[in-house]
Amino acid sequence: MKALRFNEYGQPDVLQVADMELPTPGPGEVLVRVAAAAINPSDVKNVAGLFSATLPRTPGRDFAGTVVSEGAWQGKVVWGSGAGFGVVRDGAQREYLCLSANWLSEMPANLSQPEAATVGVPYVTAWTALVRAGDIRSDETVLITGSNGAVGRAAIQIAHWKGARVIGVGRSDHPSEADVAINTSKEDLQAVVAEATGGRGVDMVLDAVGGPMFEPALKTLRQGGQQVAITSAGMRRVEFDLMDYYHSQLHLIGVDTMKLTGIEIASILDDLRPGFESGALTPAPYSLLSIEDARQAYASLSSGKASQKQVIVFD
Image (cartoon, rainbow, N blue to C red):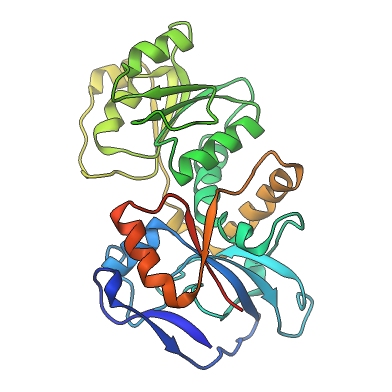
């Protein structure tokens, strides 16, 4: 089989296509023929060494394919985002992969396999933050920073599916599915939020940016509101007014989807399936490429030039 590999950390030029033997399923595992595998920003960071992956390694967390080994799952079309994929075990950017049967989730029948491969990381992250950590409610208003990104877009759709109102925050006038869109490069975040909420503030913040956005986003919360942090772009340390924080009885929650188990990820994908089947959730725009073009796609994503999700497809 063909597989994307990296033997050292670095820029996308360390990636190469290798011929490898088909993996053999162990006890409780199945063999999946991969039809499509998405490239995420976290894959680029992984190749660069951010997650200290054991080497050599095949990257990629998200995939869709067909179970080809014998057993109850044989012939079923599945989607997934494997725990530890690309870091402590070989990832999805290869023609065949093995994983535990209890990590499997059946793909929505109304999606193509490339569409299904785009779902994993963005939607699993957004679901974990909004639903599992934030316990989002239908009468709430949620502020989402980085709303034009993959996680932000997924979070807007999930919040709407759950009946919540969304204020999306970005640094451009890019079209948004949010109920209120704020361009912080020319609008005052606190002023617009105050006007949109009648001075009350938002119930929840999903901070998909962190860094310099952390404190401004925190200031938009109502009394007793909660902020869920999933990343911190550009800077690890942030500052905020501790007295304001405890006087306002705010709550901070951290979410790291790299800590999710394969069983948890499969359960989240099962929860997401009805949203895609009903049309409440829709996959992001994507571009198809061969594994031979993957290094170039990594480079485009690394430089910020990729405007769509990049999906490797196998014949």
